[in-house]
Image (cartoon, rainbow, N blue to C red; front, side, top):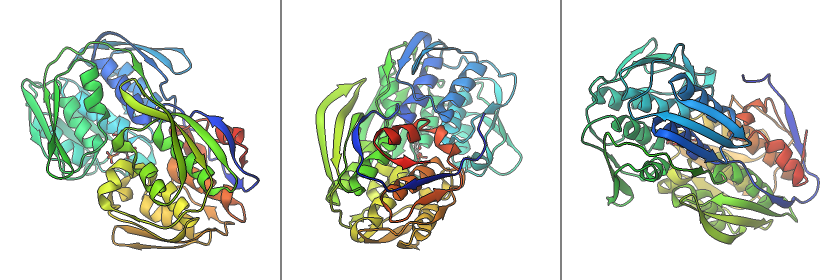
Length: 442
Ligand code: S3P
């Protein structure tokens, strides 16, 4: 399904101008498909992200017995099989590049009395799965894996799932969500206690579908989430808001390209996803929230961003969960700021679609920006400009690819990337949308 390598070059032309809507949120899109597949009856989804990652989740739930139909652009209709109702798939489930699809579905399958083989591309095959398998085994699932905790692996779901109390060792919404999805099949209460609150789309959507989910504060930054198992999930319409992690690219592009004035429509502003906007505001970026409203249970607004001077800031480790996917593009913004930006506590970046800590530093270095990694911190010496002229190696990572192209739009010399094909995993019309704003990417 994935296409051949596609080198791309971005160069500075004029200011970016216009009004665009980025595609639907990736996290919510995966969850909408999975909960629709576990509900009894017909769920309609509007605004689904039709990127490769989400399409792989759609294929997986179809292979597990849900009826899945596409009825229009972003419009999908599913007939679910009920909690614990997945049927054994005929072949391996291929999640391509998607850690989220894979880990959430490991959880969903762990509560069903079936076996399924999980696989993915070369990037996903390197990523850690043991962190998810460990609690799923406590719930009663069994794993068969050839190389310790990596794909491909076969999971035999629990015949009699046990509700557990789980304290994730890392701040990860994927891990939390996998346990909650497995807990759906267990009798009694499944409890997840997170020291750092992570994106709460699973909790919100479970509630939307009628499950009994209670969320209470825990410690300074954490939450305790309890889910009453074996609910009947009742189909609900789902409207997917625009993805703030995709909006991040045109947002930063406009903030650093002189003279730009861009409106991004309907961007989801869930507080557990809004760390980049908070950080850009600290840096002095001119971002206005227009027409704030609630759509599909999430706060959304149109964001107007205008280019302006940025200054370096310190980004605390506690903010990482709310902007975990945004560090590569923040590193680009930091290059164009005056002064030092210190981003702390980025250990998890090493196990994303690529080692994004190293990848982001290499991207900046290749384009004449001074950058250091100290432990788990990324330190960028901004000078208000970047020379550009570099070739960025993207390591099968969509976010490194888009970040490097945004860098090229404001650099003195063009920036090239070795492969833009992975952009299709999360933002298939990225290049076209940037063209509409006046960007030169070819
Ligand atoms: C996601 C959670 C994050 C994020 C990923 C999407 C999700 O991963 O990096 O792109 O939808 O739950 P972790 O929770 O593992 O940090």
